Image 1 (cartoon, protein in one colour):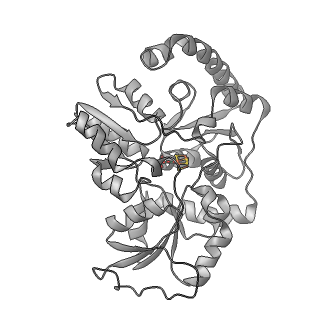
Image 2: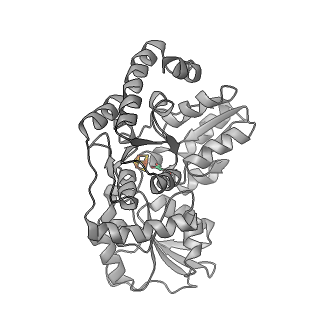
Image 3: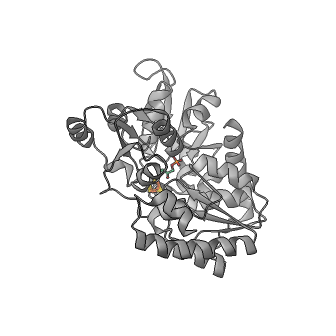
Length: 343
Ligand code: 13P
Ligand code: SF4
């Protein structure tokens, strides 16, 4: 295991750390096999974990697909709670483990199921799209889920001029622009919804919510300008959870999987990723010929909770088990399954 990790991570992880983590990873691999488990790792996992124990790595949509297909008894989700819940929604008879109880998400925490019910009472009949970065009870109130990689496709699939899109203010604004809609953030007082066609260009309407990713909201256009001044040919990639101004100033915007593919397939002299910093390390490890710039002052405090130590304990102690009440799971399943079918 040490040799395998060294070959990939020599320039990214100090040797002393690599030796220690390789031992943990070897123990996890052993237990994984004994317990017939599958390990799914999100693209934001730290390099030593990302390149050692997962059977599959990917963005949230790719991992939902893998979760839906697995025949293992246990799914260990190296990601955050809403992702592990999605795996449970898709696999009610399997044990789903999340290695840390602290791996939340500011977007998932920004909205409750009652908030969604209030919006539905206010805007009866308007279809509800929820970002997968929400908890199961919120998904259960939705017509369909989406991830950052399929959000525009999901919205367009509804063939509705007016769509409720929850809970990320910035993702909603970016998708509204992409799909030619006006975005509104209504206070839930009896103010009438603008009628379809009342937007500036006679376009459709997207009703948003003021949730934000505490990581991506921190990137600014000044960050981009400062980096471009120093590296005029840099390619700048922004996650769609960044503000519309930041997305407009970047060269590319896409989910974590799309960002990885963009770097692999293009030939810029440098790249700057406006997203969780660990992903830059993971891309640098796989593409030693590419120069990755980092703005690592901004980290996701939730994804960072998932360590090799906690993953080992998760498998040893069967913790932390993700439970979703059946009546909520069955309703949330419809919304997640409908998304997966769209792709
Ligand atoms: P992706 O769906 O792009 O993997 O993003 C998940 C996430 O939490 C981004 O902050
Ligand atoms: Fe949530 Fe943002 Fe962390 Fe992604 S990066 S898990 S959206 S807080």
